[in-house]
Image 1 (tube, rainbow, N blue to C red):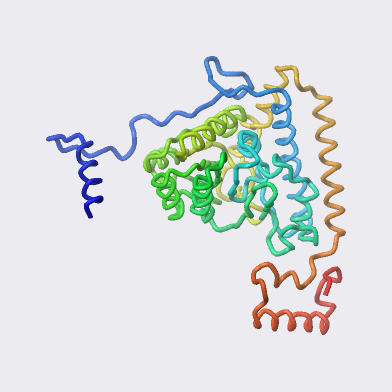
Image 2: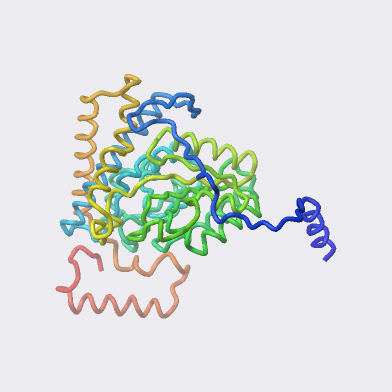
Length: 400
C-alpha cells in the first residue's frame, strides 16, 4: 500500500496542471510521416538517412523477393489445380518479408502471422521444405496435421503459424521477456496485419511489452484490408502507428514497398530493443495485391484498377530492382536466369513432394502426451479398423 501511494504521488508530481478545461482532439492535426528511402522509380531520395547495405546482402534481398514471388504464383496455381487444399500469397508485400528478415539475426525469434513465408525463406527454409509442408507428406515437419502455409521451423527460430488473428502477439511478448531474463543478445519480432489491431490480444500485448520493457519488435503490415474489411471501417485513428505511441512504445511508420526503408527501420529497431530493452512498434504501409487467400475473390469488394495500380506502379520488387541496376549489380540476363532457375527448382520440389507418402496414421496421435491416454489409444484402434474395413475410402499412400 505504501509503495502504491509513492508511485501515485510520483505521477502527480510530474503532472502539469491547468485551470482551463481542454479535451484532447480525437485525431492529430497532422498525420504521422512515413519513412521512405527509395522513390517509386528506385532513386535514393535526396537527404534520406538509411542503413548502408553491401552488394552481397543487397542481391540476396532481391533474389529472395523474386523467389517468393515465383513461389506464390506456382503454389497458387497448384491449389487451383486441386493438388493442394489451400494457399495465400504475399504479392505486393515481398519487401516487408525479405527486407525485414535481412535486418534480423538468426538468434532473433520470429512469431509470424500467415503472410511472412519470406522471413522463413531468408533464414534458409528450402523450396523442398515449403513443398513438403504444403503437400503434407511424411517429410513435412507438421506431419500433415497443419493446413498449408502454417509453416514452422525450430532450427530457424520461426514459431509455427496459426490462423486465429493476433494470438501470437502476447506469446511473442512472453518470448521477448524470457530473452530479457536470460540476458540474451537477441529480440523477438511478431508480425500481424491491420486487422489484428482490432483484437483484444493486440492491446494486451502492447501494454504487457511496454510495462515489462520487453525486447520485442511489433511489425504491423497495414495492407489496407482485413480480408474484405477496409481500414476505414476498422478504426478512426491515424493508422496503426499511433496505437503503439498510445501505449508508451517508440513507434515508426515506414513505406512497406520500399525494401531499403524496411531494412533500415527494422535494423535500427533491433538495435534499440536490445540495447535499451524497450519495445518498438513498426507500421509498414503496403497493399495486399493478391486475394486474401484461395478462398477469397477480392474483386467482389475492391476495384480492379486499384489492384492493377499497386501491382504495377507500386510494385516493391520492380522498385528495388531499379536501384540495384543503377548500382551496376543487375541486368536482364541475370534476371532471366534467376527466374528460370527458381521455377525449375520449385517445380522439381513439387514433383518430389507430391510423390512422397503421407505421414503414418499413428502420427495423428503423437507429440502431445508422453504416454497416450486411453481415449486416444481407443481412437487410434478404431481408426485403423475403419481404414482396413473401407480401404477404398482412404488414400492408398497413407501407411496404416
